[in-house]
Length: 319
Image (cartoon, rainbow, N blue to C red):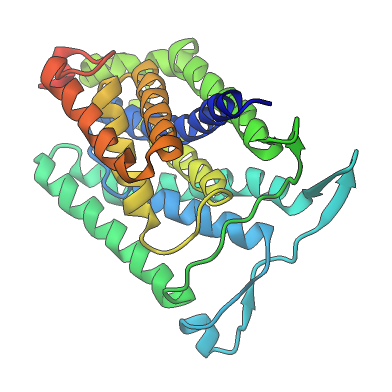
């Protein structure tokens, strides 16, 4: 394969994989913002929880610091269970993690909505920002206290390549992520549940007067957003290192950039925004890594200047 072809294929695969992670984060954040008008700065903490819980389900890691180490635990996590599937080594534990992580964080999301978000629905946005940012810091510091500041290396549960150059695991992740994104879109846009949620966005009091339990729908939307963020953390940890600050650095900021580009409150916008930023970031990571973050933020600035409501957002939500 020619170098140019190899580079283009690498950019496409990496762009789709990174874009899928950005889109999952963006969808989780935007459905909460769009339906409940709630700014959740703890969204990155849910990504962080997903990364750590997924790691514990998937592989065994050595500890060198932290409360668990001081209590006598030198290792944490399940020992990897690898099997040979048609010549490809597969860690079966990761399959368990792909089911358990969203379920665990879905439950956390239900509790967050009930005890953290709901009391602040009718309060000023500054209150929402402060309480969720504080919660994010608490989660980050609890994890740092338990596991120490150790940076854990990325782990890929599936080995092997396609045509000798393309990571098989990246292709699998792209396919799975597209399936989850499509299912979320259909749940919000094509079901009775989604209709209730979207009606609540327009006039929640009218929905309540019709006898529809909109509060329960809000709880499910919040939990769904949490589960999507955790799943993004699970697959993100298979490509990048895991440490306490990743919730803010690799999740919260990209999630907000995604909905700025795509448009607040729009699932389609979050998908488009995630893919645009994913390809921009992957392309410059491949060609000029030192410029990747600069170009990423520059692209967002161009969107803000030319289309403040985002690619698929409404001027009302933007304002």
